Length: 400
Image (cartoon, rainbow, N blue to C red):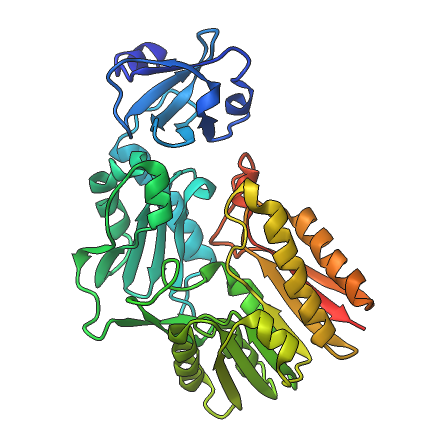
């Protein structure tokens, strides 16, 4: 088997002595500082054979000197990275979603979750009959023509749409724009999806991320369970996912707040689509300002802000932001009020997030109980070897 692999002749990437431990532990990232040498002529995105400084074979990955993560591992065995390799990985991922998530009431979910499905740099989200893909790294970009048909064959699709993340492209040294790769998007620019029986319109022109915050599916279900009779404040509402969940959970009234006019319009549209009888108010406004100044008196607040922290250097500053907003929310709640608070930054660990919320509760001088700790839904699996993949964390709190 080894002799056969050697004939494949991937260029070698040799690590510095002592830097092989993370790779031996199946961690998929190799940083530039761990690399001793690479063969001449390597181009960004090329496949490489990774060896330790002692000549030990460690696995196969793809190389990009423009990225701080210089090598991302695809296999820790003697494996040819070809159509068969990607077909196997994609089939395993699709099977999980079809068995556990997709059904008559839910037709939207993440199909490929990058490192969590052992395909670093590849994201694929299904929205009914539209597949949204992201080739976030140069290595995956080079495999695009090989991967696309392997994804498409699993679903009856109207279109395949590539959603480009400018920040990710910059880090990888890529230049490209969002575009339709196959088929056509709906003429009106929107797609209707269903999640646990709820209906949502996804507007592709103004959509954040790949279109919807699919990772919060289980947490929307939680809100639906606890919203009965509540006056709900949905902060950073985006397209109203939590607002709709609260409405179908028989909330008394709902206030949706977001700084984006597109988000407010989408929240209104989706509320009318699902629960037009529920009293619903939506305001384009800064959430910090609303929490501190508005007269609306909620007894259930949802805080699901965008990532305040996008690098290690921002941890301290963003921690202050998370503390301030949780402090304002805790102060606004009456005795017995509920707060669901979340952070989607991988740099803010669950332990740190809880400490931040602890600080907010202490400053508010309120009794606060943790009723539940939450994370992302099952279609966002985390490789046990890659703890950085655990980015979404949430706390359901009771404030007394």
